[in-house]
Length: 173
Image 1 (cartoon, rainbow, N blue to C red):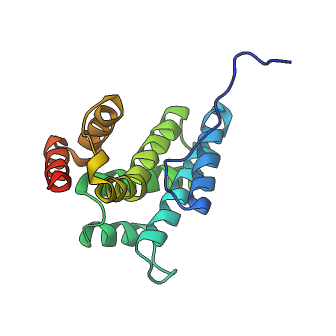
Image 2 (tube, helix red, strand yellow; image 1 turned 90 degrees about the vertical axis):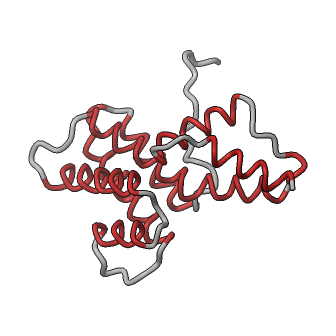
């Protein structure tokens, strides 16, 4: 028996800790159902909070707002990601506390912001470490790298070419 159309499994960005990936997958799953926009936004916020705690452990009594500020202050996220993180936090708060909640579009936006946040803090560092460990196989070209360049441009707010050129120069010796 074949079901058409086939649905692709929901995946979190690579190299996320399992508990964070699970929360992200729940956010995405809820966002696919328009009536679950509030649940999706709350899970995006939860994912962000879990990641913030994981990246920069400190007292559990610190509010997410202060955690985001500390991540930015400690240069663990860029100013653009700081702004996005506050958007995710706000969408999650609205979903939990406002009578109107969030729209399906706002929930999808929170998911995408969360995806980029996870890519920046988990996926990119691991990919760079792997590329650095195998300098002879590093080749900063091709469709996969072009997608990564586009993503970096979006997240960093500046051209990623210099990052790749520098990494390529470093790994080629």
